[in-house]
Length: 397
View 1 (cartoon, rainbow, N blue to C red):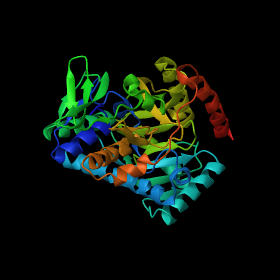
View 2: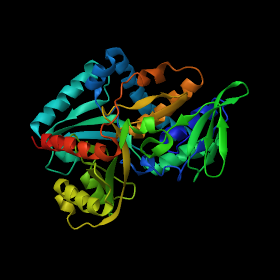
View 3: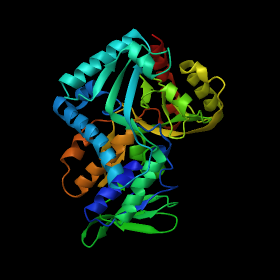
């Protein structure tokens, strides 16, 4: 197993519970990548949207993917309860619209979810009710999903790793996988993974490095691009002031392409994310940008300082659909495209099922087609920056 994020830890845990002997290699520390730094909003579905997924793989398989994503929300809550993971989980997630066009789109989405996908956890929140919940004049309507939620992502990832270790998984941090080759083990196909400190031989190999997979599997790296995203945390606001910002303590995300997302923390701060970078990673400028965006939503926080700022890379596919499959006999999970906090956990369960011989659900995801990003190492980012200008303009309409 390569990668100590949620996907890798979930795969390791589910395999160990099936009786497999599992070794997990992590180049840095458990949760060091996107899993431990994310906005941590648990959302049903996948980032590209259900209608696009139907065009890619058809109605039947798209419904299967949807059902897996909903199971992922349940699985997350079950894992937290079963393994007593202290990760500040709170139920409830909202999407909010800034303009009438987006409100119409939310109404259409609710109709699709209720009538076509039998998903009744979500409801419309009209303007007057929304302003009683979110203390901002910026939004015209929203949705509330009682099955979604938010949590402390690093605590959750580390909790999964601890559960995996209790189940017998051997975890090696600071053990970057440099290369892997096919070998014969006891007359059967297997793999040998090389690190700086030694080698690991295994019958099955799972690559769960996402944006940080690097040169280990260039064919996979061409399917994704790492997009820099940033989050800031205010100074502690105190319980009363924090609660006044988001009365129901839900996680909130707007529906712009270049979106803002925010939630309250357990220690009564506002966590606010959204600035993205397709051309590089500059935490200092992102800190100022995030604060400016935060004040457009909550101008009443103009007197509040920013205590912390952090960021990292999210792995995005061209279609924004997840990319699961096999490469030269090795399994891989990547391309969660910002929808990974719940989907990564169920993805690990599906991968464990596939290794154990039941690959039907994994193979539904593996049928989603994916193209390489064009332009090679030098041109792919500039071309993506130009493409994103169109989406920025669309948000303004």
